[in-house]
Length: 141
Ligand SMILES: [Zn+2]
Image (cartoon, rainbow, N blue to C red; front, side):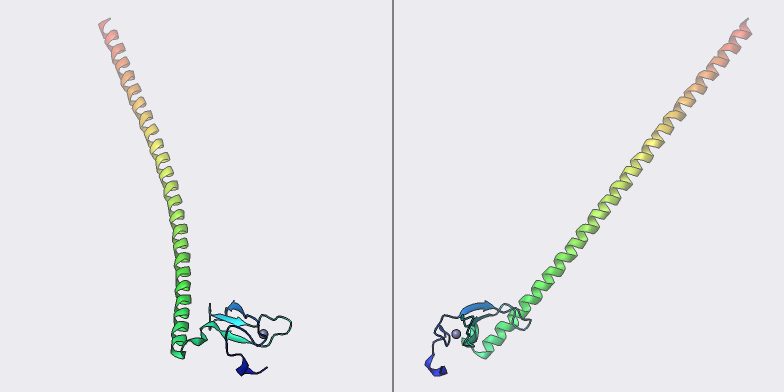
């Protein structure tokens, strides 16, 4: 096995087409690489897919990847915050509804009380009229 004999990056040292994988390491998240497809007797072939780029380009791409990951993290935090706000809003809505129901109940009670007072007043007025009527009748006798 000599390095020079395989100049093509399309095949590994076994002459097989290398399998593509995606890196999940924090330093290279999402970066594609190729590995020898021979599982039993790997020739040890291993290559980044973007190895053909210049070092500067690779660094820039990695920087962008890291920024993308950070942006994804920020979006997750925002989504979590939004969920929190929604939960708090629902809680507030429930409180307002409960308070409205209480208010309606109290208003209902006050209205019934007013009705009772009105009936009582009417009763008193009728009683007065009755007493006056009796007195009038007694006086005219
Ligand atoms: Zn191989």
